[in-house]
Image 1 (cartoon, one colour):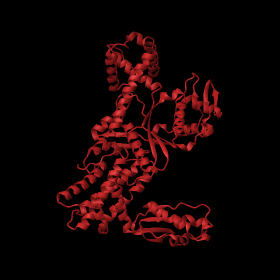
Image 2 (tube, rainbow, N blue to C red):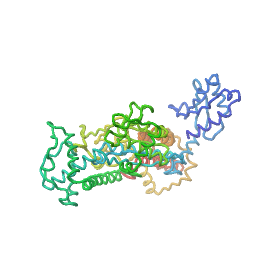
Image 3 (tube, rainbow, N blue to C red):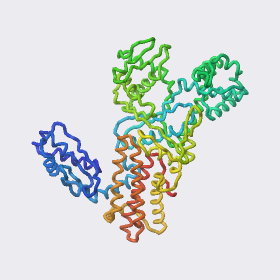
Image 4 (cartoon, rainbow, N blue to C red):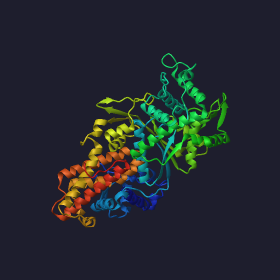
Length: 583
């Protein structure tokens, strides 16, 4: 509806008097906003105010010209000048009635836009596969999945990707942690390193390793720990675990160390995949970091060299990142010949562009705040547009149980997994609560509220509205009433109560909310809209009877609540939340 009103003003702009048009060098786009007070109409346009300066005219004069040029439309009852030059538009009742009809006839497609031709790859979650997903990862998952659904609903071709960091030191520490727990299961006694992964899940993986390979990888403690740096408070935990990684490679050999490494990696990845599928989060591709080492990194570095964007210093190879707006130059090859994480990152993003994606949208944790400038610099240095990259940072989530904050540490194993959270509050509450706040704000997740069956729990309140409509329809059938949409269209003028008008206006906002939420990368906008819509419905439900004897009024009211049910269904689906028929 908003777009239709905007189109009318675009046409009016083109029909302004010649002497006015000649003064306009750059044609502005009419901005249409909903009015805060229905007394001032339904929409307001500030086009006259924007044209006043270039036309050197009083904005009310231009507003008068625009009004005179505004095409007639069955959507518009009247339009008038207000204040310094705003044009307020009052919609006809028929405009809103047509909206109700569109909702019911479009069904699941209502609010969705036609294909835009834009291809977007969204990389999200991408948690290191060193343990199960925890509640922090859950927020990345819920936000990323909802954002992908919003982008799809607004006509974009969306590809969902998880970048698997399966190389590097943390994965080596995981492999050693699994192997050490395996040795314990073989009867080897030693003090478990402080910097190893401590969680119970490591022990479970080790048990599976023992079941499959028996004592194949067993060694004695004396051989394992001989001449290693001391661990613990008196020693150096980092040096100790790094030395253990090197010793494991020597004792097991490259082939068997890789076997243990891959065993732990595969077990955790299988768990993450299952966890996300149960959470309703679909991933199109799991992109392994080690795949980049098959030539993608060398290709990226070759491009940097070709464009004279690298230099050598202190035995290392550096990228001239400062030439492209970064705060400092970045090492791409260390003095020992190893390629850096940064080299992998820019190669990965180049690969995304080479796969034909227009926009590379990364959803990352808040600790990646310095990531944007350096990756954008790398893309530009390799001949790609810097604005093809967009990064959304996710602030931390704090879990509260019984009013007390739950502490989390992946390394120590003291954390609440996403799976545990889902089992406690349910998928629906988890998905909804995770997107209740903007991604750039910290989130306090209240377990007790998420489990409550009250109007204070927003997801329950919204789902209850949907279930109430279903209950009314069942009661209608039980009473022997029938309802036909085609019959209802001629009765919509009977919806004259203030609650009905307010509800119809709320419903008409849904396509605008979807567009705004997608543009701003803000699923919370949709979550809050659904909460408000549910409130409007519950208020209407408590104030009026739907199954009245008069067929015309009954048909009209049923059409209205069926439209409410449809919009709630559509909105909850985008957020990954179910719409139950009974509660």
